[in-house]
Image 1 (cartoon, rainbow, N blue to C red):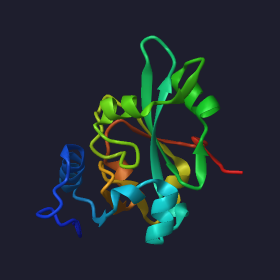
Image 2 (cartoon, rainbow, N blue to C red):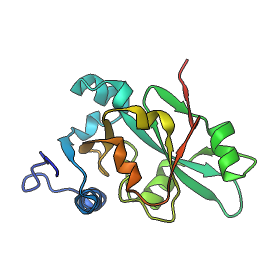
Image 3 (spheres, rainbow, N blue to C red):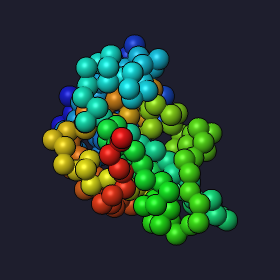
Image 4 (cartoon, rainbow, N blue to C red):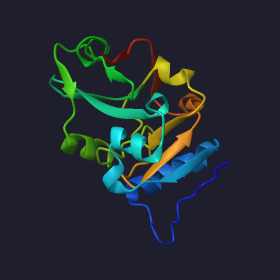
Length: 175
């Protein structure tokens, strides 16, 4: 099951992280909880400081379709790629314009802050789109619902998450 390293007695998780940890427990998939200095939670800094290859660091970005009513989707992509928000995401949402959700929108939708957003424990009504390249990794590092933890887990977890679709071309290689 899990090999949690988080010292919850000295560093209790916030509500979002607690929900993520409970979700992981309920899924019954092997994972490792990694402590993270909240000041080092942003992907590039995290990878450099903790010696994590960006090729296995998975970002979760909330995309927002500019429609009425506004539409959202959680998108998972590797740190070595960029979300194709103007073509792939826009077309999947069926909207004319699409962008990234603001930090406030992300927090309101997920209960999580940028730098800790994860694909686990999201509302079931929020579509979860996974770039197909993520599924090719042996393991990925995801946010933990808080800027103070990250989760090392197999991408097979996405076979168990609700409202999930693997999407070819969701993310493009960075230049």
